[in-house]
Length: 101
Image (cartoon, rainbow, N blue to C red):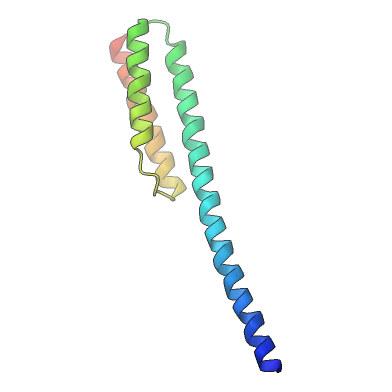
């Protein structure tokens, strides 16, 4: 009888560990999404504040920014990789704004 109780408890622990791993992956995906949206809002505001751009150029830059933001691979989980890609993305968009001005 004790053996059966031990096996049942062990199976529950294994199931709980698997569930915790799955929840951790979901949390990381949500955190990554939050970083992307925060960065997108920051860039959007930068575009809006760029006074030397015509309205049409601002809209074009915003559409381009949204295209790039939504085409980023959501499977990336490495924060360092995202931070590098995010800053490169922001730099490219701001360079385009400067050329258009």
